[in-house]
Amino acid sequence: MRIILTRHGETEENKNGVLQGWKHGQLSSDGKKQAKLLAKRLKDIDIDITYTSDLKRCSDTAKEIMMFHKKVCVIEEKLLRERGLGEFEGRKIGKSDWDALPGDLYTNCPSGGETFEEVWERLKLFYKQLLKKHTNETILIIGHGGAQCLLQGIIENKGLRESFDLPKLDNTAISEFEINANGVVKAIGINSVAHLD
View 1 (tube, rainbow, N blue to C red):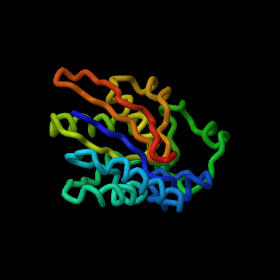
View 2 (cartoon, rainbow, N blue to C red; view 1 turned 120 degrees about the horizontal axis):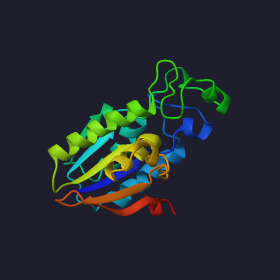
View 3 (tube, helix red, strand yellow; view 1 turned 135 degrees about the vertical axis):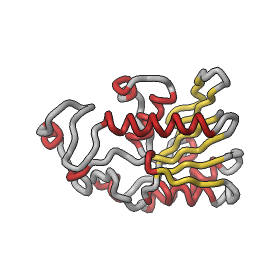
View 4 (spheres, rainbow, N blue to C red; view 1 turned 90 degrees about the vertical axis):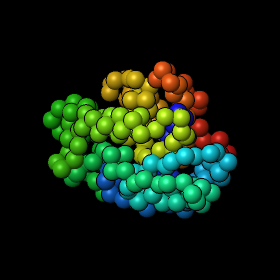
């Protein structure tokens, strides 16, 4: 199995330091260019299936890629969403706002949002389902910076806390993995943005 992880193009909210969480977000002009360049980079890869977060910033990025893969099935998957940030969504939030929440980095939760532990559990569920459904296929997964970081940790058999030390994917960056029949994972490339040069 070959898994290609990527992140959506830059959004207006990314540019302005606004937290999005489960808000859809709007690709910026740079984000749209990034998505087109990513699409060109992936156009000659034989993708068997694409999974994308159902949030608009990811599905809009997916549409650019799929211009070159018109016969590939695209599944919008809610389990791939970024962390739900509840009352923090759509706002610029400082360290003091996070520090005011009870719990630590892994267990704190803005009102109406999710903890990182909850995000971790739903991404583990997604990955478990992925392994059951697919074997020797090439799978493209389009998601979000934080969620893709955790998903990479799950793929590499790391724990939640270890996964926080992994580099967060830049907008439209690619991280690629091969998983053999014995479940051994080999990283082919991490956080590559060669297409943006």
